[in-house]
Amino acid sequence: MSERLAGLLLPAFSPRRAGDLGIGDTRSLKEWIDLAGANDIGFLQLLPINETGADDSPYNAISSVALEPLYLAMEDVPGLTEHEISAARTDLGEASVRVRYASVRRVKRALLDLAWSRFDRANAGFVAFRKEQAGWLEEYTTYKWLMEQCGGSEVWDIWPEEIRTAAGALTRLERAREIDEKHTEDRLGFHAWVQWLCFSQWEAVRAYGDERRVKLMGDIPIGVSRYSADVFFNRNDFDLEWCGGAPPETVFKYDRFIQRWGQNWGIPLYHWNRMEAAGFPWWRQRISKLTEIFHIFRIDHVLGFYRIYSFPWQPKRNAEFLELTEREAAMKTGGPLPRWSPRPDDTEPNCNANRSDGETRLRMVQAAAGESAVVAEDLGFVPPYVRPHLASLGIAGFRIPHWDEDAKGHVVKGKDFPECSFATYATHDHDSIPAMWPALQRTAGLKKGDEDEIGRARDYLRRMAEFAGLTGKERYGPKVRGKLLDAVLESHSRYAAIMITDLIDSTDRINSPGTVGPQNWSWRVPQDAQFDKALADLKTRIDRAKRSPV
Image 1 (cartoon, one colour):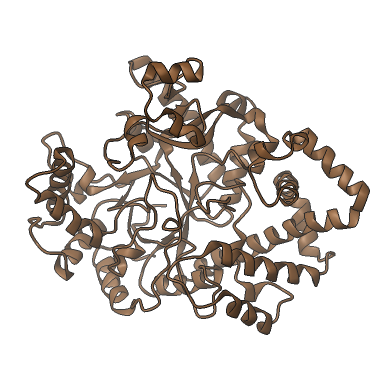
Image 2 (cartoon, helix red, strand yellow):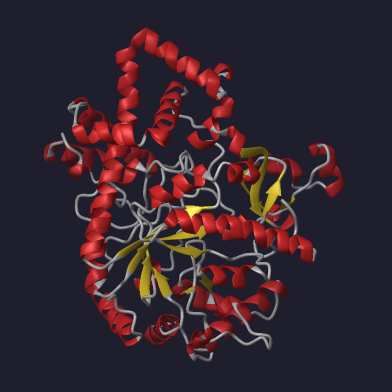
């Protein structure tokens, strides 16, 4: 893809439409495709849409393939009446400023159960789907059945001991079939049917985007949840003794664990050698299913394809290690401490070996992606070989203006960004532009306080201002907003994107890393948000920057 495209980051849970059920859905995304197409926005950037676990995080999916049923538009589910959907809306109550996951899940699950009771199990499309997708679908539906047996929990290492292994679980399933085959097959069929609906609706969204010259951009996390169908049934591919994460960062001033030890994401590491020897079948399946829906996809934490910071304990044990010295921590773990896996970038041979590993794995990703474009989120502790290597593969890496500087400490101007790159001011883990600019000004102006934080704010503000042709003293408003938007859109990068919060001048956050709670992954576009003027302004800037889709 050589087009210069402008994009809008819009999590699937965020858009609203008249009559939705408390969360964004495939119909609301079609409405945004209409808006994007009419205003020369070339792509909508979504977060992962795989089915989530109990924490509702799109980056902690219970399947690398199965899609999140909450995004189904219930009007497009066969067998439901408008009266039944309307009653569900009433049951849900008044529209909320955020997604209330438990309530939304309850009303949508009730509607799906009702529709399934009326569905013709011999439907040719459904029968073909189950047959064609059996490679992943049978394990997934069995996992969902097991979750039902265990009160809905996906945490398999607290399930009854006899079903904590794949062999034991399959024995339990066969026993259930012997006792009540009809009911057992009905539950397995239900979960397969829901996935058929999900893929059908999302494929229709893609086709809708194709008609209107709007591409969909997906997201593939570096890991998959420990508590997923993938890990449960394929444990030989995963190293369950270690968890992936990120090294210590002082920027997380309110999280002492991250400052002390780093971010422990809890995702199991891969047995890469075993995967490679088999031809990476799991990865190829994961990517090929993703590209049925998305024209472009972002690899979240692409650095993990080279090496990843890892922990010898699960996140639930973090508190045990918070106050320990390294020696005390080693005594508790039996020796191992958090480290880079498989090796650090501390010597030239190690750097060469890590780069070689990335080469093998990313070429596999590109082959599996086919005509879909690959974007790499290459932020964090980036070894010097990563960006040149990504460029050699034609994979666009991220360019965050206020984080980049040249050898003299000056910001890298947009005209000097490589063509094969993705320019943006923030990801879903950061503040929006209208929140960031004033916050940087406030912190940079402090006379006393955390010197590192003040110095960082001054550097970021200086670079951001220099990038956009500003002084950094201007109050945030239309002039500053316009200059910042123009600077990123007019950059040399192949892709330039802003967040939905930037578009509507919202200071809300989509996610706050290092925190867990209802404030994350639940932001919805405000009911009173006005788009017409902002979209018209953005279209003018996109066209002036020569980023209109062709």
